[in-house]
Length: 638
Image 1 (cartoon, rainbow, N blue to C red):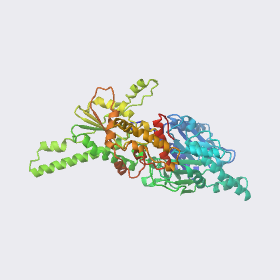
Image 2: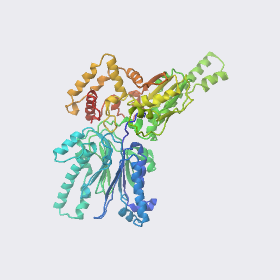
Image 3: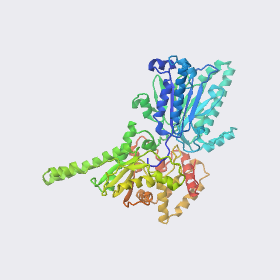
Image 4: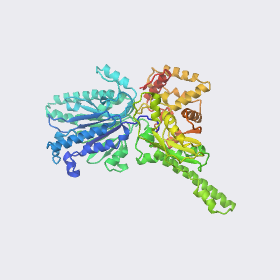
């Protein structure tokens, strides 16, 4: 993606289902679970560089010994630092004779992460601070094992203000008004109620001491806790929790907006935000990896018992299409096929844009996530060329003209779609310069080109996976591509026009920054329809205080007077770079929403393109986003 929008967060949870001694004997690895957690997080490192965190719960630890641990780091290399520190701590204790790897009891007693239950999180912040305190897992501590809770997730909740207000009304004093603290406190509230009720039952039944702890573990019901806590949440989420007694749970929103996969065998169960990391780390086949069902929670009890049950009524599945377009790793077999299909779907428009002239066209892509779609585009273009050759050969046969070597060279051996690596992304410059002009001058050098492969008569086609804000396209990419001096530059986006904000985990909440929105606003003003903007503002204000269930998408009126092609043409005009010597043509091609959904049949969550939100809170966020735009207020709208 040329525009620097935020990725999704990544989660990892591993629960070993055998005693630690088993893994030492079978794999000769005294910290088998910790090694696997590291690999599972490293394979998802594409999902977060704003910090990382890990946690562990040891099961069956005697009183007086620590059993729950957490480590977080807010640096861009936080994942590396966390695991390096822990591996060094382990090696140092082995060297000093504190830990004897052949005796796993010494590992469990003296290494914080020599545990049966391990969790990890990779953070890409969509808002708030970027300090260590904002990194997951969040932790609510207690002297009662079953009232300790560590929580992490990949989510965006649209009504965290309402949830925080409800907590205050109960007499709770939240320190931060944000998604994760609100979710943590809500779950803890119901965890405390459950714990207190079970404790009273056990006390009245005559249990005491260790028996209460044992029976508490048996009776604590994470499904019931989650069902009570999540009934008023609005948003997209995958959330994992580790309770101090050894219970764990992973839950997914009712529309399946955020992804969640798991792998289970008789030795362990592991969860992750993507399928391929589970396949790679545990050497599993694709069919062995399952999805947590929308509206379901997967519970792993402290004794290793596992079950998946609904906690909410599942709605229409609306998995995020941006996961398939961009966020998730492209080596997933389904995602690889889908991205190729997205590239191929653009070929008819691309063919028209080059004037059906393959001889004078060069095809490339903007690194690196568009590479898979590029292969699909090239396959589609070659198919078009093959059909051309076939039809021309059939015409020759009908005309009884001889098939000479020159004709064969012209038809079959020449004019095939020519792919080149034109754009290169260099190491990003970390600039300390404060002046905007100087910063942009340095930023323009992020990309470089291959010189000599594009001729002045050529049309240069570059594939991008999406165009959101258009700033990188205008200020960097088109500027550097123009130095190849082509007749025309075509930027083809595998995604449709991004018209509406996201509120379910992606940092795309300010509608005024979207280039498609800017184009529509420009067209309204140029065509004498600027009053539509104020009309939409009044409509948004009128429903601002209505229940979210009654809100509708008034912002669609900004776009409805124009065709997609008109908005696209205006986008091309807006992103044309200024103050350059090149005066060639720039054309933008966007994927249609119809072709997007055909190419990605596994996902239908397209609200950023269509404005059709899967939850009522989405319409509230959209409404607030437009009001903020009109009133010239910056910042997230939820």
